[in-house]
Image 1: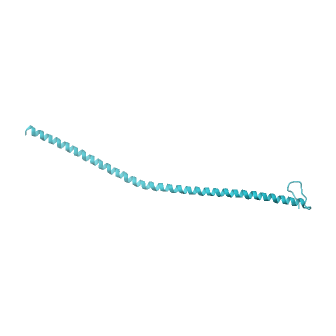
Image 2: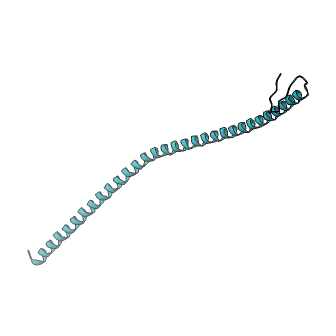
Length: 128
């Protein structure tokens, strides 16, 4: 073997080594990318499963909010009814008070004009 053949063999071995190293690194890189793709897919699947649960919880929160607003509206309506009844009670009490005053005045007049009734000077004391 002459020197030129030896250099060609050495160059071929070095070139084969470089190609093998490149292929090994390239394969490792592809495996890493595949592992990253698989991990990303797993994360997406977990997120999709969690999204269903999250949507259920959001729907429950919206239902409870609607129920609370309905209860508040009913409470407001009952409060308005109570206020109306209180106003009506006050009006009836004033009317009854006026009627009581009229009745007391008529009785007092009757006692004053009745010759058989002795009227004391103290307020609303009469004898029959």
